[in-house]
Length: 371
Image (cartoon, rainbow, N blue to C red):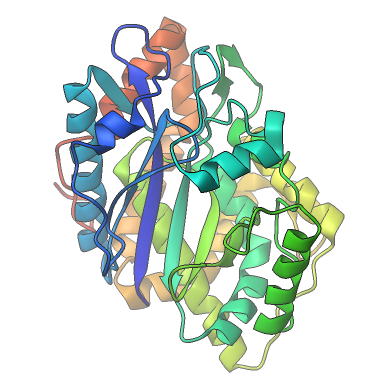
């Protein structure tokens, strides 16, 4: 299955470490997006944010190369403007609310959501996986739903927000839940039902248009893919590669379940919200919620179950060795949230410095973890 990744980043001032509303200047130094593949650089909601998108990839080596090249290009453009590129789910240091990015759609979004979107400097990692058709894609989303909180826990990288420790591993996810219709998507029986739900949300004034949803997984409005939007942006390239490999393997598992005639379980919506909250609160360092069995379990147990489900497909895709290496590093060093808190022993400015240093690394790692 093909895979692609979009990563959102913050621009911070080299002197103060606070966010800087200079996205237009930074993006002006870079090539426009490739219309054929989607690879390139894009504006995000606020003028302190930029996005890098890969093209369509089939292997992790190619994905890693494109992710690294995208980060390096953005970081170089930021340096030319006296800025630094930072991969964090939220802004670490206090800064004034930035203006929205240029464009009529961004203006409509800020007008509609008012204070909810004001200062929403939140950055995610979105993984696209190719699927045969929209009907299959909707059925795949149903099968992915139980695993979304665990993917969030693995990616958690936003413990600080505007100069304070929130106590959460992913404060970005808490910020996102303020939007209407956020969280794990409902169970859909068909693509038509999916489309009708979005149309009604637009009609009822909860969404700007049909291209917008706040679900943690959705059908891409642009590409023939499912788009998994649950993860915080990872500090390191390997964090994004791990999310992509696991997501693709879970899509493969969903397709295998569908081929065997097994429907996805219907999940309790309140427990879905509880599972997302627990993953945002604790990351890998506390309790999670098993949505299939409807009871609390350690987050580490959910990770083990996810890996067991994904493993045959990771091996099939040639991704197993790379994922094992990334998992080992994650277990040894902790999530991005844990690493941010460790860096905070030197103060919050030290956190920004460490994030910037790791956001755009120079070495390219192969799929087996070797340099």
